[in-house]
Length: 129
Image 1 (cartoon, rainbow, N blue to C red):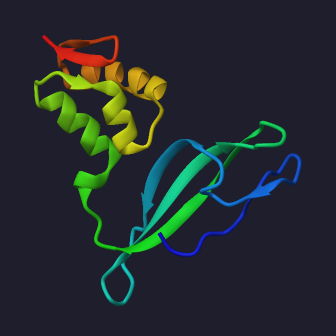
Image 2: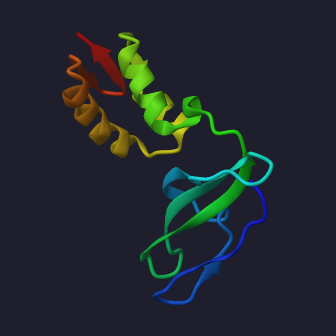
């Protein structure tokens, strides 16, 4: 990721670098149009809890230019894990895509219903049926 700006809490004014405070959730936003060289801008967005007042703050964690690969998106990684038909560790998947485990445990049932896949979360593992 390129140059990083300070994140400022709109409630109390506290400032921090995007890497100084753990994120709650991260995702990518891909620009719809490439630049003159044909590269797209990929912005890594995130949410944080302010270290001083605890209020939620959303902002850009960083930006980069380059090729966009669908295989690198959280959506693709979740769908690929579910479509594989194999048992997998939910915690490992959460760490790989930068989500917290509780979010993944909420997301998986939605994908199961959407894609008509049978399976369940048992402890730290997803077990297909």
